[in-house]
Length: 229
Ligand code: BJW
Image (cartoon, rainbow, N blue to C red; front, side, top):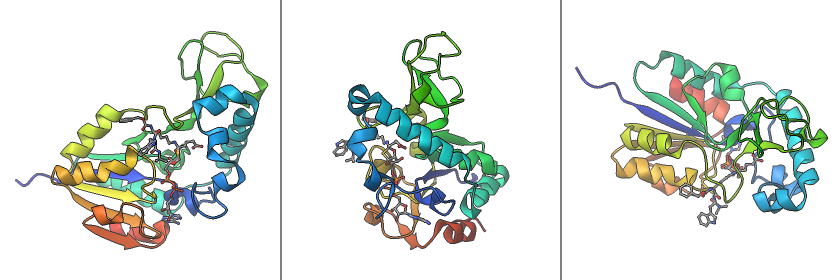
C-alpha cells in the first residue's frame, strides 16, 4: 500500500491577520508603532524591561480578545482528519491554532500562554501582567518572569524536531509568512532539498516565493479552506 504523504505546515502572522492580530511588517503593522529593536531583543529587555513588559502585557491582553478564523479552523480539521504524519509549526505566539482545535502543533517562537522564569528556568502559565513583577509560582522569586517568546538572537524552540519533520515530509506548506525571519524562512529550501513538494499560500508573493514549487496568493481565510477542501 502507498505511504500516506506526511505534511508539514509552517504558519506566520498572516494566518491570524483576519482575526484582527496585526502582522509584523505590513504598513501600520505591529512594529510601526514600536521599533522592533525596542521590544524584541534580549538587549532591549536588559536596557528597558518596563517598556518591553508593558508592550507584551498589552499584546497578550489584545490577543485574548481575538477568535480563530476560517484558516485556523480548516487547519484544525485537517489535523483531526489526516491519517498520516502531520505537524503544524507556527511562528505565532497567539493560541488561535489550539483554540481552533489543532493539536499536532508547536510554537517555534514561543507563546503568550507561558512566561519564563529567569531565576529557575521554569515556564509557568502567564497569568497576569508581568509589569507588576509577580513571583514565579515555581521558585517564589519575584520580578524574574519574562515573556516566553523567542527574540532576535535567541534560538527558536524545538529546532531538532522541526528539522526532523521537515526533512521527512512529502509536502511542505507555508501559510501567511513573509519569509523575512530565519531559520523559519529557510525551511522551504530544507524541505525541497529533501524531495518534498512545496506550496505557499500567502496574501502576496513572499520574499522566498521563488523557492516554492507553487504559490497561491490571496487571504488565508479563502486559500486555506480551499486547499484543505
Ligand atoms: C496574509 C494575510 C492574510 C497578511 N492571509 N497572508 C542576517 C541574515 C539571515 C539571518 C539573520 C541575519 N541577521 C540575524 C539573523 C537571524 C535572525 C533573522 O532572521 N533576522 C532577519 C530579520 C534577517 N533570526 C533570529 O535571530 C532567530 N534566531 C536565530 O537565528 O538563532 C540562531 C539559529 C541558528 C541556526 C539554527 C537555528 C537558530 C530568532 C528569530 C525570532 C523571531 N521572533 C519574532 C518576534 C517575536 C516577538 C513577538 O512576537 O513580539 O517572531 S520576529 C517576528 O517575525 C515574529 C514572527 O514570528 C516572525 C515572522 O514574521 P511573519 O510571521 O512572517 O510575519 P510578517 O508580518 O513578516 O509577514 C506576514 C505575511 O503574511 C506577509 O507576507 C503578508 O503578505 C501575509 N499576510 N495578511 C494570508 N489575510
